[in-house]
Each structure stands twice: as structure tokens, then as C-alpha cells.
Image (cartoon, rainbow, N blue to C red; front, side, top):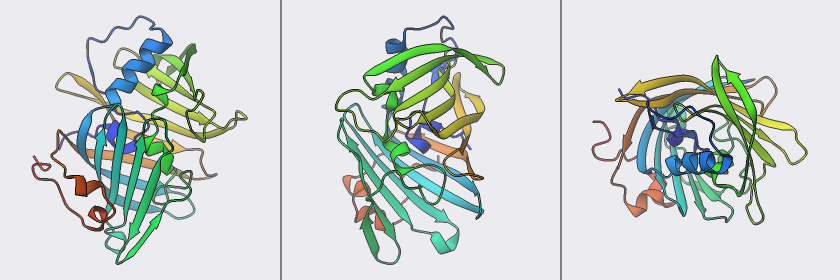
Length: 262
């Protein structure tokens, strides 16, 4: 199976593919952020992922993820495949431009409701709904605030802050970027008062056909004594979705896109 491409699983811009020949010289903040943001706009994709939630209640979920991402809009669907008692539970999220994201949740057999708090946990995990659709690398205010090693890899420390008219529950985001591979090895998200809300660590990076891909993530900080592990197993790009796949009617069915098992 192909390694998991993290951009698709989280939506928060860990979806990066780069060639092994990426430059190691320091990059201006605006250029670095623009390149990272552009790598998120990867068209359509289908992902299978295992999510292990380790808190007061331990739970393992198998998910399928459908995505459409462009410069102007993002549509994301998360659907539970396993365990049996949660199969069919589905999330639909949308974001267009600088507007606030919106979403719906379907719980079989017939419960459909609007997600009224995008800061709430995704499927009981340490991620929020907002994390899946927000592209903080596209925010107006970007700055290099230092360099620091993560796991023995020298990284540029990029700080992103929302500008005027850009909506987010976060006041700032710091990203430790391995600029040779163009992979964020750590992301920390802070409140407006500077409190650390969430940390996301890339725990494994793999090489596939000359590209570097984040393969595993650990998310912590959202709740005391809790963390979430994400292990990607398969991704398919350029998937032919229908518009119905990204509607409240469409998420009531578990449909695997044709060709996604290749």
C-alpha cells in the first residue's frame, strides 16, 4: 500500500510532497508560506487512515477521506469504516475563501445536524473540525522567527498569524519546516493570548518515487492526558468525485471511488 500523504488527512497543511532536490538555503517567510500553501491545493484525493485516540477512553477508528482542494475552496468528507458500531458516521466540511468554514455530521440511521462549533473534537479525537480545512500558510501575516532542530533536522521556524478579515479561533501558528524536504515536522497552534492549544508532530517521513511524504502524526495538547495517532495507509490523487459526494445526501452512503484501490 502507498504511504499516507498527511495533507489529505488533516487539512491543516501537512499535505506536502517535494522533490529530494529541494534547496536548503533559508527562504523568505512569504515565499516559504506560499510554497507550502500551494502544495495543499492538490485537487482531488482519496485517503484511508487509522486513527488511534488515547485518552480517558481509548478508541481506534478506520476512516476514508474524500477531498477537493483549490485556491478558492475546500470540501472535505470524513467517514468511519470501522468499528461496526460507528460505521457510516460522516463529517462534511466546507470552506470558501476567507469565509468561515461550515459543516454537517451524519450519524446513522437518520440523524443529520449542523456542526455549530468548529472548535469541537473531530470524531472524539484531539483534532478539531477547523483543523481539517484551515490553511494558515495562506494567511496574510508570515514571519521567520528563528531556526530550531526537530529530531536532529534543522528547521526554519515560521510563524503565521491571521490578517484582517481572516477568521480563525487561533491567534498564531508556529511551524518547524524541513525546507530540504518541504515537510513541517512540528506545528503548534496558539490562542490569541498565547496559550498553546494543540501540537502536531510528524513522527515518520517516507520517500516515495523521489518525493518526501509525512506518513504518521501525533496530535496532543488539546485535552490533558490525551493524544491522537494518525497512521496513513493509502492515498489516490486525481480521483473522479461527483458533486453529490460532497453533499449532506451523499455522506449518508459509504461509497469508495472507482480506481481508489489501485
